[in-house]
Image 1: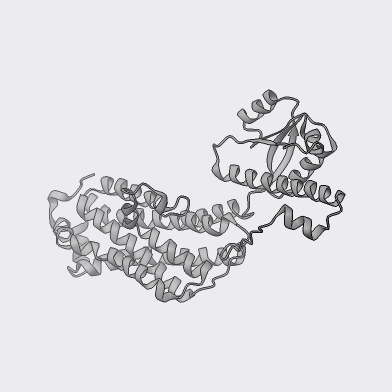
Image 2: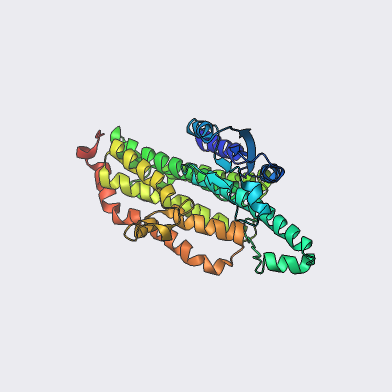
Length: 363
């Protein structure tokens, strides 16, 4: 209970700001002109970038980047302003390390936005000098204007889609490990026969009695995650809360079913914990949140269908952020139900190893 609770608190604090802001960059301004200073002020005024340092040379700036003091280098040549006044193409060079795609993307987009705004201002001044009106000048400067509409995450908040996934990963790991240990320990310590005897010889009753508490605790943790996302992080449930809750229950039971399948197949607590933990962690890779499944190598893409987290994360996004009608998510709910059939495939074996002393005290 404490471990998933700690993970919820940890990732809430980590993603509380939600956005990547004020990334430090270093400017190498060899122009030292009013135009270069104005452009630097415009770049510094963007939300994602902070012109924190100025270097006298590229070598000095590269040293700062190698020491990870800055996220980018902005170089302005000595002829920056003179080329503008002469009507010659002038350029600003931005050097990115390429080691952090998220940070690089924020720096590039903010710098590009500031440079485009500055360039538009220069062009507008030239048109004004020629006696051209502002409206006509803007048509010449930007004949096509893009209107970008972000439906589900208008603030581009990283916490809205990363924080829930990390929190749910905590639920996945604890569910698999706790279920594996709860059942596997009966074999490891040779208490499985007594355990079944206390349940009247019913394997189903024994499993329900042992695993129901884990199911309830994890279900409560999912509800706590929803509370944190809505109350603390400011998200809204725009879809069906009841459908989301039902899906979360099937999501938890699906991972418990996988854990039972692993225990029955291996009949070894140590090996089952290793395989179960590895399986739980791999779900993050194939969730499609940080790297789209469709962009993965073709032969790898089918592996994403082997993890319940992928289906539940789609349901979560649909109901939490997009407000998709539940009729479109029912097939995904059906795919979660398929995982519940896994214990049936090894039911006879699971019952046999519980009574066979040859499988006791292994691992």
